[in-house]
Amino acid sequence: MTTKADLDKALFEGLCRLGDSTLVLGHRVSEWCGLAPVLEEDIALANVALDLIGQTQLWLGLAAEVEGKGRDADELAFRRDVWEFRNLLLVERPNGDFGHTLMRQFLFDAWHQPMLKALEGSGDSRIAGIAAKAGREVAYHLERSADLVIRLGDGTEESHARMQAALDRLWPYTGEMMAGDSTDAALAEAGIMAAPDSIRPVWDALVAEVLGEATLKAPESTFMHKGGKQGQHSEHLGHMLATMQWLQRAYPDATW
Amino acid sequence: MYAQMVTSEATNDDPAKLVAFQARIDAGEKIEPKDWMPEGYRKTLIRQIGQHAHSEIVGQLPEGNWITRAPTLERKAILLAKVQDEAGHGLYLYCAAETLGVSRDELTEALLSGKMKYSSIFNYPTLTWADMGAVGWLVDGAAIMNQVPLQRTSFGPYARAMVRICKEESFHQRQGYDIMMKMAFGTPAQKAMAQDALNRFWYPSLMMFGPSDKDSVHSAQSMAWKIKMNTNDELRQKFVDQTVPQAEYLGLTIPDPAVKWNEDKGGYDFSEPDWSEFFEVIKGNGPCNAERLEARQKAWDDGAWFRDGLMAHASKRATAKVAAE
Ligand SMILES: [Fe+2]
Ligand SMILES: [Fe+2]
View 1 (cartoon, rainbow over the protein chains, first blue to last red):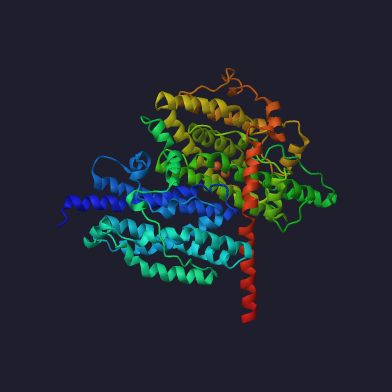
View 2 (cartoon, rainbow over the protein chains, first blue to last red):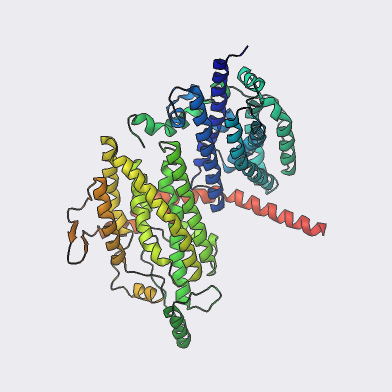
């Protein structure tokens, strides 16, 4: 039998998984500021990053509330270390070229959108509310990233090759999004969050359709990395946090 | 300013047409892209609007330098939104320039080759978080001084771009001053950073208006055409008069002992910046000129495959559509 305390613990984990993923991806996208291939992309990337940072404030804000230890979203974002982060490995992948950045966004959006749709039906009205708001933003992210993957996959020889290379490199990080563990199971059973594997059919269909139109091929290998959701990250995350958290860590008594 | 020392172009047009054109401007009419205009008017405007657009684009970099280190989620979001606005300003202005017959790609290439300039201010580094405050407060503050009157400029597309831009600039200045307040009223280290930022940005901000142009024929022509609305000295004085009390409120010291209220002129006295430094920066010898241009060049070069890919896809689609019809 799951006690209320156990369930709250699982809920805190589940909310950190969502909020840390939007935080880390939002941060990665914001690294492009001023450096995108065209001005319209600078503006679009900033939009995506802004949405993701806004969603982070909501998810981590709720996580802090559920935890009930007097922390807030900023404290969770800026004062936890690598092993306490629960984001997906996919989103901490470095930006690489613009093709990598777009492919990472698409593979994530194709999961994020149906996941939020499912979370709109959460038995916890706070989660359903955040999911509904975020869902409207993410529907647009998906439309944009899918469209660009198609246009660049079916563009020049070079753009095709770059998109295929990005897909090959990022593919092994996609499985984690749909792989559940005991935390996910507890939350699904309580009707609070959707089980990750319930997203699989939608994700598969969407990705197959877009890759087909883009003339890109998903790798055959079924090997998938995992661990991000449990706090086992790649080397890249620590460097990101060193940058992101530096001011808060260097001047712990300051308010900003 | 964002467009500094724009030299006006000579015009060899029909004198009767010139008189009629000047009469339209004097009557406060807006000149639209399809209207007849003197060649010099067109060329001067391209130079001025182009330089302004480039400043918005290069201006993303010194603030972009701190987006990944912003200290809270809210500060990160505000700064991102601000830098995104600057990209939007660049876009409006390139569009305004395009109505004069020059493409965005041509202007970009002129920036990268060094043929066109951007504001000297963006060649200074942003070293601490307080610089995000100082840039919003002083740099956007100085930009507003110039841009508010330009809402009445004679060229329609430029004036309309300025109206949109000015709405956002005042938010930029407020968020900068808000950071400054947090810093100036914060811990001793924060206060020290705030003073240091003011020390470094004060004179470069004064330089934004350009050297005195009260005797410049170029400025006189631009003012007659209403593509420049005030002299550089007028705007600089207004900026100082606005900024000194704001610094006092913050408890910060303007790094110029000569700053003193002058009852007779109804404004503050202040020292001129070191104009030899300004001319070095304009020539390319500022602290960050090389980095700024390298960053823009890299973005342009690295993005070539992306732009080509989109074009190729569009033409495939167009061909497929024709074939299907
Ligand atoms: Fe601007
Ligand atoms: Fe601005």
